[in-house]
Amino acid sequence: MNSPLSNHSNSLTAQLVACALAVVSLLYLPLPILPLLAQTYRLNPGESGFTLAAFGVAYACGFLVFGPLSDRVGRQPVMAGGLLALALVTVVLTMVSTPGTFLMGRALQGFAAASFPPVALAYLAERGTPRQRAWGVAWMSTAFLSAGLLGQIYGGSVANRWGFGVALLPLSCIYVLTAIRIGIVKDTAHRAKSPVTSLWSNYRPLGGLLANAALRRVYVPAFLLLLCFVAFYVELDAHLGAAMAQQHISPLLARALALPAFFAPLAVASYIPRWGAHRIATAGLVVAAAGLVLSALAGADHLYALLGASVVFVAGIGIGVPALIARIAGIAAAPVRGLAVSFYTFVLFIGASIGPWVALRSSGLSEEAFLLVLAALMAAAAGYSAGTATGLRTS
Image (cartoon, rainbow, N blue to C red; front, side, top):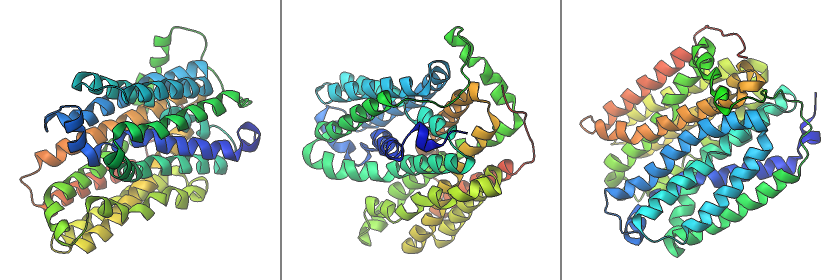
């Protein structure tokens, strides 16, 4: 078996992780500066939300394009080409000024950004020993998760002070440098490639993936994972923002308190090969559900206890994400692994896109009741994940 040191150096892995952080941050960067973006691009307050939706929908849909494409032509060409396209779109986006072109640019940016996360995950998940693959996926998962916080901090500090366009330029440099590095690294990994057929044929295995009972026990919990995560923080901002302000707790500080939990993937990486991805994933979902229950018990009257419980919740998310990916890598055969991981990321971010809607539709509930609803969803996900259904390795 090839060592990861022979296929890609540790420095390349570090660069891929840093690039993942820069790519996924694009989704969250506008959150703290929506009023500024509305003013800059002449959007009304209701339209400012399309800044996120335009990127998010194109981002999720792009996963289903680039994952199968990487199965067909290889991981490295897709990552390198996608990052160059993302850098170009990002630079052009700094020059637009009208609402329509801005939203179109955000959609194109989201679609190009989708070329990296699922392909990079598949790239790291199929190299080295089980332990090395687990660590690679754990670092990548940490980057994806922490981008939700660090992207907002970056947007609130840099973009709020110097403008959205200025904040995008350093990220573009990261994309170009990573694309060049990927392009010059020789990939000697022996990975089965799909036969040369029509591109549409790459999607035919999707039915088989969905029919696989073991994979469904990954996809359903994945859908609920980020849905509950996003809904939790939307609820926190919408209904507890004033109470937190009285306690001098800013929205970014509320998220920063959970920062240590974003490193949970690294804490469990060495245990995934030993205990099994199935058990670790289920344990993560149970921990997340417990964190939501503790948050509900703390309630709005005990904000610091609620935020402390949110660390438990986020830690559960951090445990679950890499373990679910590891389950896919162990079930899906190499020719369709890119499609399997891509559909996982598609489901994950569709859940994230629905999260705000779920929070707003539940505005009639008390904070405690809403948190218990989220806890019930996470508990249901844990129960479904814990099922003993097995599936044959998809081919």
